[in-house]
Length: 326
Ligand SMILES: Nc1nc2c(ncn2[C@@H]2O[C@H](COP(=O)(O)OP(=O)(O)OP(=O)(O)O)[C@@H](O)[C@H]2O)c(=O)[nH]1
Ligand SMILES: [Mg+2]
Image (cartoon, rainbow, N blue to C red; front, side, top):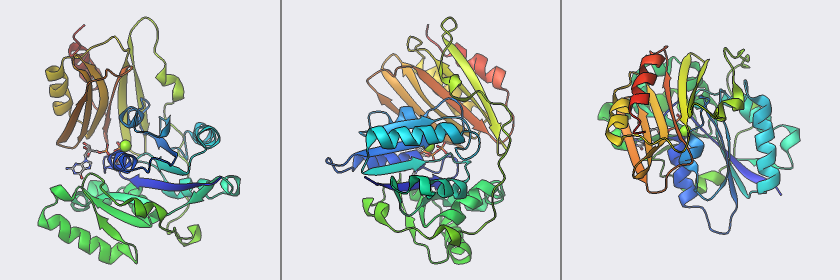
């Protein structure tokens, strides 16, 4: 059985996981879906956000799946396909990933009888088109270039200027490709059945694999028995991340934790944390913070910060530790 497979790309914080959650909420009850998420940080958060969403889930934390984690990614993918035998597979690569290499892997003869690759959807926050930190970023540009369909997400936050920039971008770089507006990834499921371009038509040269700076791999997910928490750093593609994982017993003060997440001087914050009331999902991109609570406590607490420059991780860590209730 081949799984209809959709790669959902987009820069850091553009709304990939939110879109997957929307799609999963509309999954036909009689279909088996699987989700593969690959995160930049070592401490997997998107998996926790996607938990209980009704799909087989596999998470590969730590860098881009085409470079650093080539093997774990393939092992993860193979086990999802073999054990899940899904009708449909959705893949979220890291917002700092290399889509062309990932597409090449998925379209390779090895996966021919398993994967039926559909159109690549790329999430774009048009507000970022006015900021050279994004438009000059190679990953940002490569992802848009490799897409078959562009999803202009976060429409609820666009100013007239963002719409103008989007129209200009579409004129200069869009080609024949559809550009579909969305808010919180509310796209039609029909997009998952759109045909993809031939890989040979994709623009751009071949990406040279970066040598990972510091690597702890999947081992970062295990906790030492004594401390009750640990942290993991990752660096690459011009970004740094620092994440912490705490055991299931550790409970956080909601107010102090939110204050910390709101004020941390970094570009991206995301976590699933245990609070007295259950679980607190924290998801911040720039200045916009999105939170949600769920009554069931999570199996552990995990939170990650991502920034284009090194941050004062030790100070941030002390403050985070102070937000614990016990
Ligand atoms: N205002 C607004 N916020 C959104 C929308 N879609 C997503 N967000 C918020 O944007 C932030 C990032 O969303 P995610 O879905 O986690 O983005 P992502 O692309 O998966 O992020 P990474 O995996 O870290 O690259 C979260 O705070 C979301 O709540 C939208 O349409 N409008
Ligand atoms: Mg995500």
